[in-house]
Image (tube, rainbow, N blue to C red):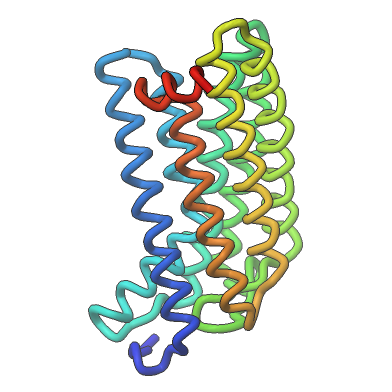
Length: 246
């Protein structure tokens, strides 16, 4: 779909710039977390990094479509936009549940992981099939960078957010009860990351349309949540020392 930068409003441009910043930061942080796997040889660390990369996928469509508009005067068609918007979230949930269950509930890790695999892969297959039949089965365009989800994708999004809240609260609560002050702070950062990410995601889903400044603020909250998520697993030594002294 041909769209030039001159066709975008100033708020759309500003919002897209912040969205692109969030996506780039998320991917870089995810890659940095994944790189720790090669020294630690810990599979949970690998899936922790993949989780955040895939969680940012709901904003890939906006970010990458904006890039193609800048470079080629072309915006993503409905199929590609909706594919990026929906197809990678199930992978994020699978990766997160793998990490969560192996770290917190290792006794039931296979039961929990298999259950989520069935749910998430079923939704992924539905998305792929529905998009190949009719893109409006998944979502409808409301603007250059705005799409409203249909019932099933919306329900899965809510299911994903509920999973993030419940598991995040359990994970962070256990960490904050630790006798190790560093682990306690990691738990606090995880709690902040989960609550801010879920809150921002809900607001971004509910307020589709001309809420320019509001949605820019949402992007800033998402960036902050990403930083909190990174610190929850890889708290820099210098920062840890400062926090513990306080």
